[in-house]
Image (tube, rainbow over all chains, first blue to last red; front, side, top):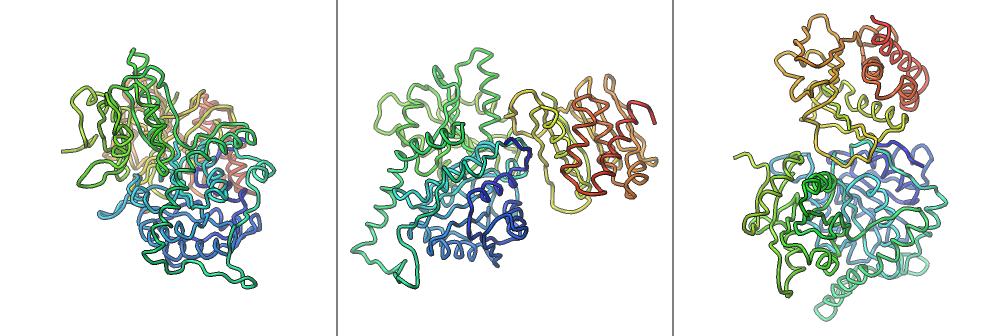
Length: 384
Length: 181
């Protein structure tokens, strides 16, 4: 049913419909209304889950790790410093192959202190072994959470999933979302059926010491699974469409790319603003298009290459930078072209850091810079 | 598409006002995107909330710089600050009246409605929180949605007596425009 909700509340409703059994969170800044809503639902008896307030994000991640290891469905949410504080446990969760789902309400990182949106937090943990998806709007954020649980718990995957949604821009925005019925969710997402779990009646050890003779294989296995996920995702997306009656893109979305020679590439909520710009430029007869990257990890390299191979000028726009190098998404897009002849010009643009507003004018500035020579890093809307 | 900028101070319910406005438009069959812009998180600091209304899906996520409609919840913000910045020609402004604050001279080609939101709220709710009254006036002045969807949005948001009284405050605000003060 279509409802008019705040993004955070909408995601909380989805987590309720997914019947998360253990939810743990650090309830103080940086945090969102998502866990506040979930705590309320648990207190009101609308969600049969254990909600565990903890003293830090490190503990929140540890609680969902432990709970997931016992074979229950888990959830946590955080952002910014909170996500950074979770890092060592995030790696551990992936190494243990636990299907934890986490929402990252993307925000900048300190110093200086800044509570506003960008992607520096989640991009920092892109190598931790979590599947990572970025939402353009609140409907997509909801749908990606449904996909997240389904993919995480798929026996061919068994990896944690992080759904990234832009802090404030999406988490605090009210817009209409179509929330599914419980029966639909139950059909799409069967009960969690762990392959191994901690059980006192049948004890096993998890997270044991693995020396040089076997550690490499654990990383090989996660990497292989990530690559396999690229093939698993389309089938599950089709199933999503059959059950919920609408499409969900989980890897990429192509927007007016057919004959486009100049293409924007971006993730997250700025994609909406870029779509407006693309339409405007198309009206002026410019052959521009947009590639929305949803899956940052696994990175759908071949699909990205196929989508972009006819472009002459590519602009990668991102709310993050690998300081001392270039934007991380730019490196990924460039690597997709590596080894192929006839490379397009691929330029990188950094914008929207620490909540700086991304306007149509910002996108136009990117568009104007495209005609020049290839640029590795250009800061847009820079005040110097 | 119509764009709305709400001026208030943190703690005065600008986000609730934006959300109610969006909900009323949604109930009335429009697409609506309502979102706040936080400054430093402290009570009393000037802040904005924004709403976009359209007959089509709204994709634009930037803040509102050239509003079609303005809502000023706290008139003291008009002291030394130009709330009309970027205001589009033909625009409509709803300003919560305060006797000690002079309304700036409106630029040509815009309509300014000064509504005694806090006075009406004090009378109806017992507290000087004029947001729902101002929204009633907004509905009447702009015609973006009727009084009924607004009251429905209020009844969904609040409960019990508070809901009923705020729905009444909205009606009073609406009638400020349709019938005069």
